[in-house]
Image (tube, rainbow, N blue to C red):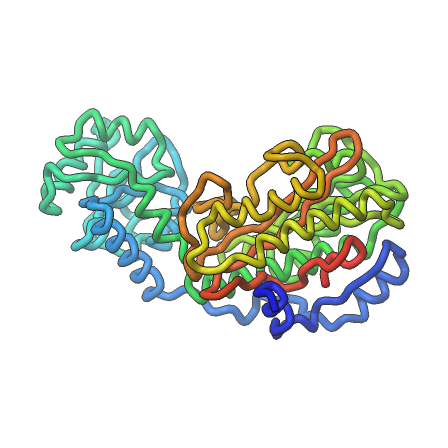
Length: 418
């Protein structure tokens, strides 16, 4: 039995997944509303603790030693939140922390924001301030000296804006290097809590799509369906939505300005997600309003086979490139073009606190997957002037396979949720 089939068979929450056939509105609506689904699926999730954040900082320290980096600078944004549970807006004024392998975070902060900073900073008590007429960059040499590495290597976090990195570079008596290997490797492998958040987030999105599909009607526009999906996300405890595309507009992988109302026989492609405890879902489903024609069904089946072809080989130790190649071989063998002709994008991307993050499932990436890494698997075929099909599920890599977040894997164009 393949890894994919084994996981689907053993999924403990599979009872929530129900199939439905071609869109026959009364039947779908009734079958959905008869189901007993908890209103808020996020209610009993555990919170991140102080220990969790300290483990994250220790991860960064491990990778700094591994890559021979003496310290790393992180400013406002996702990495600031990930390592320190600090939320701070991005402005022209430098605010952030410097972390080293053997010391607590050292903060750099505008002087007039000091009292506010003390309210939100939870890790590290060394806060160095600069007045409005002073340069914050001048403080970096002193920090590096006090850390014992005055001429060492300072990693610049990947979300540090260019004017800040250049400001540091102009005054630095130390070497500036790329800090992305530290932040990316720290975040790439998820903990049990993070995996739990993402599992629930993806379940919510799939349930929300299913509710949207249960309320389709001829003549509705994409905004109508999008509103139903947003409301369903909210009902299940998350803020999120999905971007629908109808008919020939579904051939645009990331949408188009063209507006189309729903008609019998239209492909419906919905791509979107939500956030639970700061962790993202990403799901795409493609169905037909009415009875699929032979070509729609054929293309859908090829895309599903491509997704399964990647899932069947995924496990710890597999190079990321091989998953992309496996899916692409299926599309090429079926006669839908080589390379990126109709399967126009990489197979997938990393996912976590951000919808797209390191690492990526693309043919050029030889990085080996590790247990706990999380990705999307989203092959597609796009036939401009006709329609597009994409099927996307997020998953976590396990030692010998993978786990599909939120379960409810597609079975056929008529049964997009198992």
